[in-house]
Amino acid sequence: NPIGMGQGGVGTPTVVLPADGTYALILDPSIIFTGNATVTLSSELAPPIAIDGPAVPLSFNRPGMNARLTFDGTANQRVSVGVSGVTIGGPCCIDVAFTAILKPDGTTLLNPIGMGQGGVGTPTVVLPVDGAYKIILDPSISFTGDATMTLSQDLSAPIIVNGPTVPLSISRAGQNAILSFDGTLGSQVTVRLTGNMLGNVVVRLVKPDGTVLTSGSGSSSFNLSTQTLPQNGVYTITIDPVFVSSGNITVGVTSP
Image (cartoon, rainbow, N blue to C red; front, side):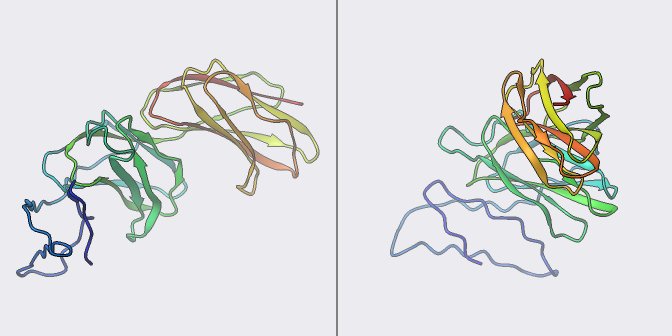
């Protein structure tokens, strides 16, 4: 379908050609405008990427070029994507590129997330089935430049109410963490974050049914509000750095 563009140009989404043959590109200036434009037709960058494998550098050296990175995933894996080393675009725009994740059947698992030149770390997604997943990176407008993609499984650790604190070390761009503990109906708990070297981080306390009981964020030490647990079961604490920073953080759970 037709896509509008301004004087900054445009890069289209990727299309998959359905058949061999001769295709045509239509450029139709609005109203009765005159002027010049340059059209570039590019195939996608398509390197593989692996969960917890090496970071993958990408160079978008053609206007409108996109990337599609494929990885093999297993049902119930918890993964996130970090995009770092971004030189795409310029200071003109809030979002210089968008990142999304597609399921093996081609439907969307993670909707496109905009990012600036500081990069982005995506929220954790839980893979629903075994199969080949795809990460999409689509520079905004017709920007060119470089970016590095990192695909990581969540750090995972147990934690005990009133037990020892748990130190976490996040060393991969965009990586998140999850800690789990057994909770009892009616007991009060407080999640405590100390030694935060990750910068701004979002922390959530999640009930056994997967819904969020409480959440908070901060760039230094902080506590989540004390909560009365509504049911017996396994509760989880998720740690999600806002940017693609690496560093350490220590988590504790006390009653109250």
